[in-house]
View 1: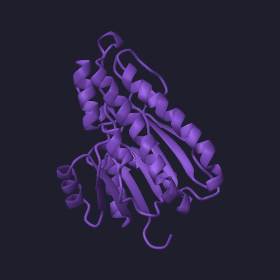
View 2: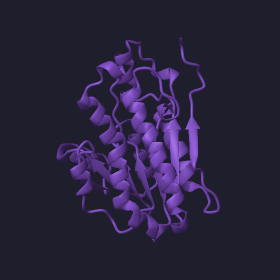
View 3: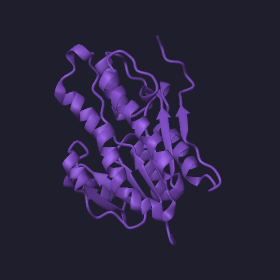
View 4: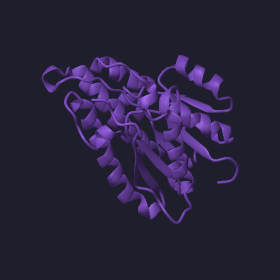
Length: 233
């Protein structure tokens, strides 16, 4: 593919997604950004001039499956968007369970299927921003962890399938990162939020860029990113 590289990013409005999109935009790459609403899309378009904005609510599988307007070629796809609602299994509502599975697992699966032809044409890369909760589940994290464990399995299967097409698939497992989502988690846990204790979104974004910029003779199937400061007990 000639000209600037082209990347699709979900979750570009905040946190890791915004940090990654900032980095890619600064490099002069072409961005395809997925927004959950027209209002959010207008905000992203203003923040990242020259980007293509598509609207589909990741919480609506039918809307994701019906998405149109994707480019013919994509150098990478980044599944960054996610939602979390903590609750013990005994109290987990159907709505919260379904929302986390739909946004964190089903939407990336559906979107990947739509993007595969474009990524195959460039022998590109698909990145799943998972979570340390996709490696180990704790109390009250059942729905979120289940969605992230599922996402890891989906990525593993996709990686095995796409080797013959030259498509690289990487799962990134960030531990607690200083994002609005993490602030919400702290509220749900009844803990004081101190952003300085956690990984910065920019650090995770730079990890993803390392994956993207890796020479063609290698791939990084999985990478875990953890804060240096130990978690307070």
